[in-house]
Image (tube, rainbow, N blue to C red; front, side, top):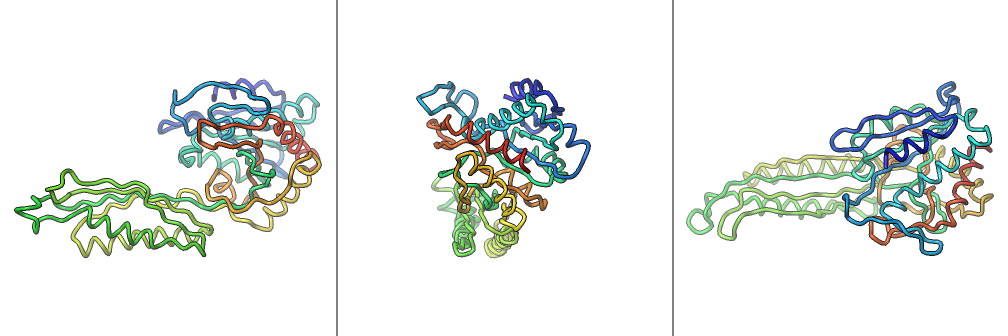
Length: 346
């Protein structure tokens, strides 16, 4: 996919491209910018996408069109958004209007796993932008995303002491019991009024029924609306692990923390939303502001730098992360027109 993008965007007159080699199993991260982006810091517009998908290679293949629906792996999340950006920039180049616009496009190869490898590049580029538009899939009614929850994750590994459950029960330290106490306390940190959720989604431990288990492990998902709540819940869970360790004699190894800060609604992001909404209306799209989204994206990372950012500007569709994923082809030209209006009327 990265090679296809390099060829396609590399052929757009007026774009200069760079490749940031991926590490830790990631593909390469790609970005292009105009001469005007390099020449001036004023009014820079950053367009953002990703070319990885959640599907392992060979999970399912193929591309087909059923009437107005195009189906295929990652077509919604988010090859459709990349198509919108490419078509708009190519049209501007054909009209001789691209080189004078301070525009850049970055597409990363690890967004679906939280952008751990590409984050330094995203932050480096975004710090020079006046605003950022992210082309994750469009939402119902073409609603524009101004808020996303922050995300975090912990891996909690507990080390006890093995013993025969019949002959030497008192000599053991039951790692599963210690972890069970942690799981109960962790789940109780959920606070719907504050928008904080804690979900222990994976758990494992023990070797046999008649052995006091020496090891147990769980995976914890964290979501939060405010950055300070994310930090607070991580600190509280680490403290809980320490309290249980002191009480049981088990050793806790807690890894992880906040992965993505929240995309928070600010006066600057509202102004950006209103500017894009005008372009959307003029293009025949809906212009409502989307309800809070529970999942994160690269918009979260960019927003945390103080750069106004909106999201969900890709084509309409449904079936995120499933074999039924599709986009509505009729929404592609509308989204492309909205982007063109935004860039030219800004």
